[in-house]
Length: 481
Image: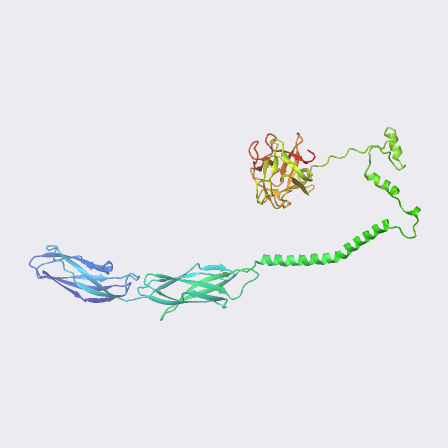
């Protein structure tokens, strides 16, 4: 061998995050000038530098290079003895490689980091945060976890209570927080707490979190319940107070009716009212054509002015009966000649579609009640009404609340009948004698058959009112045609 080496010292110690130096002496024992290259090898090679990296020596001369070891303060710098070596390669004899070896002892250090996931948990009866404990040191850590809070409001269940964590690894601790007192009514309350990671010989590592305890029932519900109970008590008291008066009135009317029908012992047959004498009093309510009129006070005079013959004065022409309210009517489209219908022949369902289908006057579920909710609430004082299906008692509805856009389908829903919803309609008579049925909440859009002249089972919706589409409806009493 043409090379002599010596490490001074052969063993060294270093703290992670700092550095130490070792001197390597090299002598050329050959008979030619040679140049040597130095390369650190082994586990500590990434943290080792050599200065200079090459050295040229004449025969019989000695040179020195310096090795610097600087392990980082991370789990990668494993605590304990770590062998190292330097590969020396001669330029003139590349195959004659020399590898002097030494030992580097890295001291141990511990560093623990803890984190709550999530830092804030919410619940009425419990919260379940997770504690992540990271070992950032270069030696194994054994630790325990415990919880505490100011005021002793919470109890803690920690699984596992003790952990062993290898360098560079993490452990997860499941924690269950339980409030010692339940908030039955009221708003939420924040409960700050602390989880401590305890290790032997060092101060504990503490992590702070917050448990937001919610009330079992919200405050507004408690207020509503109190108001409801107060109203119920008031209603019962009013009912009890007025109940005897109603009963007394009914009894009095019954007694009066009995007195009118049963003759008293002192009455004579001549003084008892007869059926014949009582009958004329009912005649003004049911006049008949051709009857001679009047009780003698002005009735004959009017008859003479009216053309003689003793005929009574003809009554005024009765006013046209309004189209609403109405019960058990059919809504027949003037264009398609089909009726507003519920799919199938049974009751409909909530949010079920309303369609058109062939009219079945013998029954089915095509009868509707037009129920007036606001007699003068519509445009120009017209009545506002809801359209209730006679079979299932649900009302035509546009979904959600308030105004709905063109094309919104007609469905069924529980009847509301207020202006807060969109179930109110009003009729607008057209020159044809038929009607537009207009939705009050949706900018007075018209009840319409979807598309143009749709066939059977075509859904109904709302659209801009037009006399050239299928928006005119006949409101038909089935027995009257």
